[in-house]
Image (cartoon, rainbow, N blue to C red):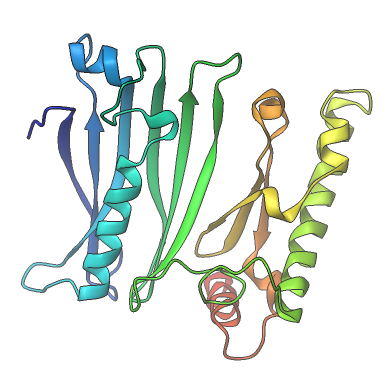
Amino acid sequence: MKTALFTVLALAVAVNASAATKLTFSHVKMKSEAGSATEKKLGSFDIDFIQIAAAPGQKLSPAQIKVNQLMREEAKNLPCGVGAEGTDDLSNQSVFMKSNVTFISPRLLAISRGLDTDCGGAHPDSGSISKIFDLETAQEIDIRTGKAPNYDSPTATQKAVDAVIMAAMKAQAKKEIASLGADDECSQTYSDLSFYTTDISLTPKALIVQNDEPHVSMACQFKTTIPLTAFSKVAPKGSLLAELAAGAAKLKK
C-alpha cells in the first residue's frame, strides 16, 4: 500500500521457524519513491524489518503483538530524521536497513539489522544492530541476564560473561593484527576494544559479536563467533544463558 511518504511492501516470505514455535515471520519493506518530491525533501530510504505471525488457525499473544509494534516503530524512527516530516532539506541523506531473524523459539526472537546511513557528512556510517525480544513479556532483553538491559550496575554474572566475550574478541583481534600487520591503522583500534561498543547477535549455536566503531574506523570492524557452550561455566544454573548453552550442546551431538 502507498502512503504520502513511502511505499510499504509486505514480502511474503513467511518462513516457518520450527514445528515447535508455530510462528512464522515475514519481511516488510518501507521504501521511498525514487525521484519523487517527497524523497527530495525527506531523504532516500530502503528499510526492511521483521514481523512475526501465527501459524494458520492460531493467534499471536498480546506480547507478540507488542513486539511487532516495537519493531514497526523502530523501523520508522530512522537516523538523521530521514523519512520524517520537518523543515530540514534531507535530499542528500539516505538510510538502508536489512533485517534478519537469527534465532526464534517459543520464548525468544533475535534479530540482526545491517544498517548503512549517509547523513550528509564526510563519512557514511554502517554497522549492525542486534536485539533480543522476550515473546512472553514483549521486553527487549540482555542475553547475559535474560532481563531488560541494565549497563549501569552490572552483576557479578554479567561481568563474568563480559570477560568471556572480551577474551574471545581479543583473541580474534590478535588474528586480525597478524593478518594485517602490526603497523596497520586498525592495530590501535583492536587494542582499545570495549564491551560497551559491541553488537551481540544470538544464533542457535553461538553469539556473534562485532566491535562498533565510529565512521572513520568502520574498516576496523570485525566479527567474533563465540560458541554458546563457552558460557556454560559462568552462566548460573537455570538462567536463560545456561539453557541456551545446554541447547547448543545438544545441537553438537
